Length: 123
Image (cartoon, rainbow, N blue to C red):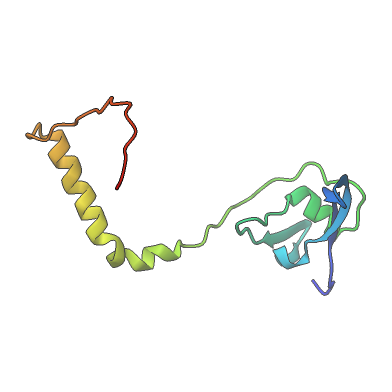
């Protein structure tokens, strides 16, 4: 955990050409520790950044090839911050529910399909 960088090599475009490029994946590693004979590590997953665990472990151990035979023991997902804003979405959900009830009840609402191919002219 004291290491400043863990690099992996990935295919990327360099000057418009396909090539290999080295990327630092150290910021994705939150925890890494030994528990008897098991190496436990925790990574962060965010939009646009998720490391392959086999390649991440190879980078941690400074190996040339991805590690084989890994077992994912658990996945912990953080709570969606939008759940704390449930009151904000309540009116919209209520309106959607009312619309669904009206459409399902066979009310006098008619769905009209317009097959007119004429362009709409404004002004």
